Image (tube, rainbow, N blue to C red; front, side, top):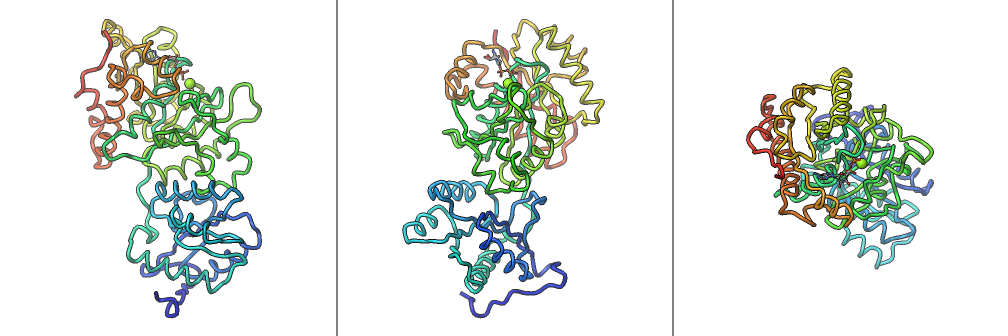
Length: 414
Ligand SMILES: Nc1ncnc2c1ncn2[C@@H]1O[C@H](COP(=O)(O)OP(=O)(O)O)[C@@H](O)[C@H]1O
Ligand SMILES: [Mg+2]
């Protein structure tokens, strides 16, 4: 350890040069005295800098305070260590007995700062952090790859938007490289997504909206709900009967932080195109507009597609998903694509018994009926996102967006 030899390198005006990366520090601390002491130490230090709360990128270092419910803090640490790319965690607490220390260490906390804060102790911990950072270049302050936001939006209510979002997210989790996936309900007119996974979340967007300035990585991880497969869920908490509205700012800050921690952020946007939904769609890499071949649905889907195009959403971001497709309706499909001026990117077969059984069991179809055509269709859809992801990263042409549709036979129930 270079505890005695280490001195924080001062950089004028708090700026950094190429040899002195600024490590962004986030403080998730309620105790005012502790927070103040740490803020003072960080701001005196030229190598570390406090993360602005408007900055939604992941910090290099997160200093967390032990909550009253210690197990809850350990669980947050475990999730953060697993999910947050390149963020190291320090724990601070008034009392750090050996059992807590051991458990925190097992969970993945790297250092422990006893309260009241001792300057020397913090500087030594920062020095060890720097040593580890040199050995692990991910912590050098560079921005890791951002997660892809996949937004599902319904041409009309009841077309199957929530089923698509839930099953696509569940299928993404099963991809060979086991991406980190979070499923977010941004439907403020009837957010019922947790029911599809038999979850009763105790937190939702409402907790974020209560004080938007508190939203940071640690706070978000506290309010996510985990499905048994490891899929993380953020519930809406709003519906037509509740008071209050989900604001575009709340959605934007939340999604930007999630992008720093997950590979895929799957959104259920419901079917109402308000300012909040528009914000979510703006942040999306792809907007999956779900429709069926029913006349009223096609009628409204056309209006939605026109609205999206008219609002400046790039055509290559918009993908049409035809849900509940039956192969006898190929001609109707061609006719509908002409009306909508949009080729279907994906056809999901109609299979009411399998889908409704999955919904009523509170489990995704890949658990209840993975071998059905509809189950396979969801799995292939998730794979297509992965393929498009890799292609778009290597700057593929617009044709690349269509290739999953072209190369795969549409899967329709007979
Ligand atoms: N591919 C499908 N085949 C048959 N029924 C489906 C399919 N997808 C969805 N459904 C049914 O449609 C109903 C509405 O789905 P849901 O996802 O809740 O719609 P939305 O979120 O658009 O309101 C559900 O009862 C579900 O069983
Ligand atoms: Mg829904």
